[in-house]
Amino acid sequence: MTQNTGTVIAVGGIAFQLFDEDVEFQGRYDYLLVGSDSVPQKSLAVYVSDRDFHEVPRNSEVAVNLFSGGLRIEKKDCWRAEYLEVAGRVNIEISRKLLQIDANSRAVVVSSVLRILVCELRRREGVLLFHASSVVSGGQAHLFLGESGVGKSTVCKLSGDRSLLGDEIAVVSPVDEGERFLVEPSPFVSERNLPRRSSISYPLGSLNFLEQSKEEERVRIDVRLALPQAMRCMLHFSDIPHEHELALDNALRMLSSVPAYRLRFSLSDKFWRLID
Image (cartoon, rainbow, N blue to C red; front, side, top):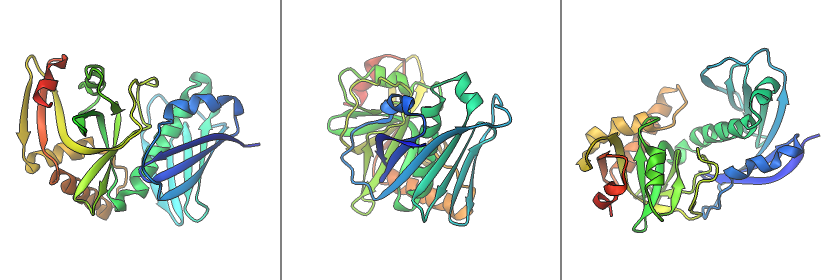
């Protein structure tokens, strides 16, 4: 029998209410919990269960497909999720074999499904998710974007006593009809005990595309150069052409409202002198 975990994760304008048949697992969702000052526009019930799949491959891509009345998300032989629009429900099934390999997979899978749902269900409202850390300085949120290993988490560790909104995925939402953008606290973190996590959204102040270097340098780049870099860092799963166009328009609107920079840094905190 599925039990209520008592866990509500609010992100990107959606309040996800989690229900899990494994009552002993409730505490492992705690790292996804972060206070938020945003008002959800949509509520979904998420039901998590485990089942037997044929096998667990070492590596397989996530597939996202629309069907009449919903959305199907799956990673072959690892997990499967279905969003049912009319019911306002998400069903997540996770491989028992995967859970035997890594007990933490349960929360990791839920996190993966939720971020995909925010991308796909809130794109028309202009919500954007990026592979980026987000740090608060001077009353603004600064995004540090880049591929895995470039230093996004390192930026957080080098940020002194500054508040953090996330170290892995940044959630950006438009306000004032797209004239401004807010960065909200992100539940999608790589460090489960991320310190100084803020529960308050902050105005987006800048985008900084990271490059490791022996010296610090921050050079402003125009929208023409920033857009392709932003698109590479954006979470986007749909293969429908007009959804691509919408994601592109959302990114362009954001880049037209805030400055973007190429930030070279030497894995020290000296780069903050170029930002503060």
